[in-house]
Image (cartoon, rainbow, N blue to C red; front, side, top):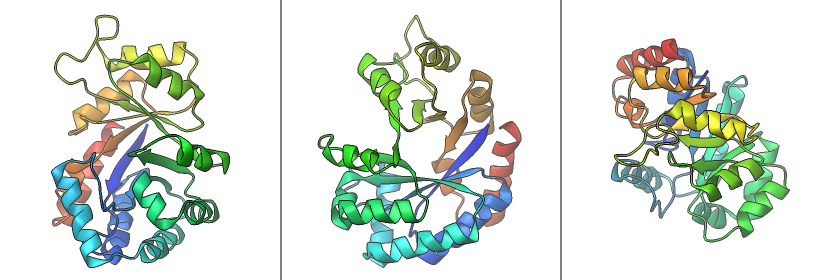
Length: 238
């Protein structure tokens, strides 16, 4: 199973992010979720929002972020990247410019958030990029249908909030099995609630193709040896 670690692009600087990506891979991370910081990350936690704000305070030029992302791709040619980006950031960059950048530099898996409608998302898909779908633990039918129609991976909520699990599907394993029975062929990567290596082991046992780890790793950025040790712990369970 793939271990997917979240990287705050540009925090505290773009060069620091590049070095951190190298440490992620050295420690055993299989895939990196890298973001474009947003000026309006309205769906993020305060912790992530503050990191994006700090990144943009230090560099407000998206061309420089793209240059850094080209560099990190060249340094880590065997590492798969997932690009997380707000629709408002795509609009700031320019839709066509964003699409061209992704195609030319092999950033083909996109987590697109904060959508006003389907227009930009459809343009990105029509260009040949893969856009993920998020499915909550209680498996809302509309979200399941979107996942079945999507050309990208499914981002499955790994741990239910209190009262969110249903009697029909009380466990992540049951949720994943249901999606497969419905005909979902694309990878299922699980996140939200994966905070320790045991959570990653649970995702693997449930049949997930990957586990997203975010704040647990990010909060160790000031202690690289501890960060790399924690990634190795997660990797051992994947």
